[in-house]
Length: 279
Image (tube, rainbow, N blue to C red; front, side):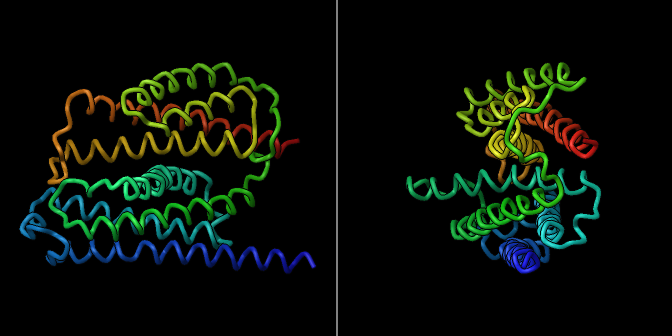
């Protein structure tokens, strides 16, 4: 009887994984069309021939391919044989990019917010953000299944005993939290705030889904969204809106704060997994 629920879970994971792959197809198709000179969706197709746009489309197409690979890794048994870091880092970045879009895109539509400024026609944003939102939700669900199977001790609610490195973790968590709180105030960034709260709970021994999830999403979104904004800004792409100095420093603070909080989260995951395995 135990085999049937396991089979159902595997089938569910397969469905989720391939659904995530399908959600990536429209964006990847657009990128391939643009890289081959097709100007569909652009008000001025000549923009596509600019070196910065060629670089940006190549990088983002590659990121979409990585997201497809991650979806397959999370939903197939061979994915559990990969090194943990090879799964955790791309998934941390992917959820950091996609989950905020999944949250903010519907809110923007309900509030009547327009499409971001740029050379792309409005319908493209609808196609892309819809795909991103669904992909982010599906990847997050797939990762929950994957993590429960591979690192189950991390998600047991309770109080974890102190460790030899807890003092250092608290120092780093406090440093990252100060940066995150500054970002939350200046940028009205809820993800930065909950990320700091989650990491603070974890370094003080709390365990379970709640603190781990918000620490993961908060730190990942700070790092990924900040890095993406800086690439667009410093790369001189047509999507660069000319960020003011304060906003530029805010994006840099996101990257640095997210990195510090992410490192603390990584130390915690490794340490607690090993301690539970040795018990």
